[in-house]
Amino acid sequence: MLRFIYVIVMRIFSIMWFVPKMAHYAAHPEKYSEEDCYKLAQTVIGKVRKTARVTTDYEGLENLPKESGYIMFSNHQGKYDALGILEGHERPCSVLMDKKRSNMFIAKQFVDMLGGQRIDRNSPRQQIRVINEMAKEVREGRNYLVFPEGGYPKKRKDNSLQDFKYGCFVSAVKAHCPVVPVALIDSYKAFGENTLCKVRTKVIYLPPILPEEYEGMKPKEICAMVKARIGAEIDRQEAARKEEPALCA
Image 1 (cartoon, rainbow, N blue to C red):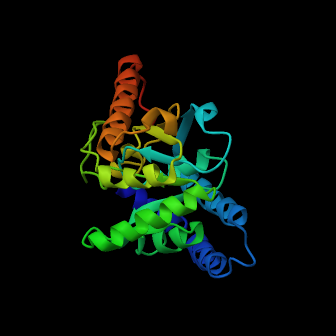
Image 2: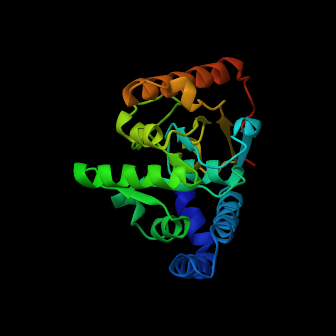
Image 3: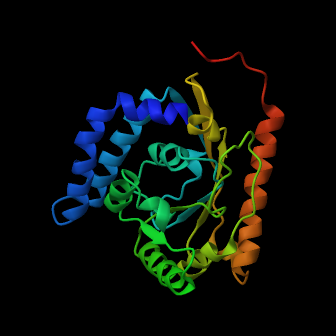
């Protein structure tokens, strides 16, 4: 939390500039293309990351499908997760977020600019509508980032997984699109630890699960498959991790 407050304080003038700018981009889609919006989003993310003293390494970029129209499903560790994933993802990508969190200051302008979808956990009917709309957009060539865990513990201390909610995988079935599992390593440290020490996180794009691979499977089964692959990658990373000296300078 200390790092998050530090970024807000140090970037207060940038916030006063970029928040209205993001809102302006979102309000004028006829003037600013999806690529323009995404480029601005990555610029904002880059400034936040540098101020926060976070370095993110990327693996598996070659696994991303060559053509747009896929959904990335990632484990969820904290406020930095989407920022870390999107900065390393070259092509425009939107997000599916909890309605309450996505309407907070800064997050609202960011999600609006990316044309994201908001899901209301208290309204099954609204959830179905959003899933259908997202599937339609993916079929038309948009990419999405989804966090099946739905949330994250406030006091996380490791890379362990929570239960995945399988409802969001209905969108992939309806879109009949590639599913890209994404494994986050140490992302919780960025804004979850009370320190200003330098932090290194990792984003791993795993090989996509193509429609023919999950053909005939139920959303719950696809969900289990994705969770298992992310879990296996996290275990592999943990096993290969070597002790490193503290990065605080």
